[in-house]
Length: 240
Image: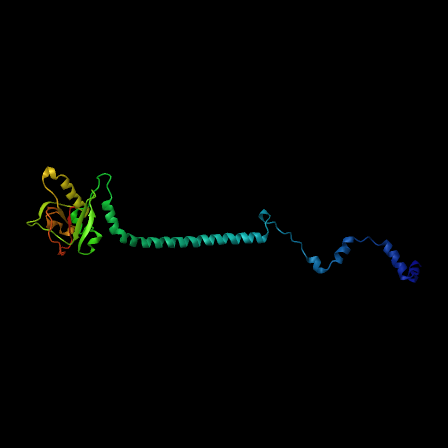
């Protein structure tokens, strides 16, 4: 009888009574169904923090800078080695070019233990001659260490004769050494009675053994005629 009455009631009244008696629904159920399928599948990813609080671009920039410095150091080292090898390859040529000068310097440098050892005459071909003797002739002037002015002629010799005689001969390394000996001899003229009027100096030491081991001759007397300048390597000088 009751069922028949419910069938005759309107549909809304019957559902209202059933809803009042239905169990309560969890609200989360509605929230889950309100989301779209795409939103439901999205997972939240937590960003990892980088060291020192730096961002990703800052770390990439630092890494690129370190790489550039390393590459630059390697390239610089290679270039430096190549430059050093180039210098070392050139050094033998420089040594060979300077070897004659270095030989002369080593011969001229004094030895602290044994003192100065001059180059022997037999090891010298030619001595230094005055610039004026680049061509034969004269007269030219040269001052002695005592400031006495001597007159000399290039490529001229005054051998012993009736008007000129050799007083002494010895080894001299320069024309000034030779005329200084003449000056010193004249300072002692009162004691030894010999006077030096002229000298002959030979800068061609290659002829030293043939000249009785002397290249400076102190002479008494003077050459009367000085017109033929054909004695190469000899210099004739007269005291004032």
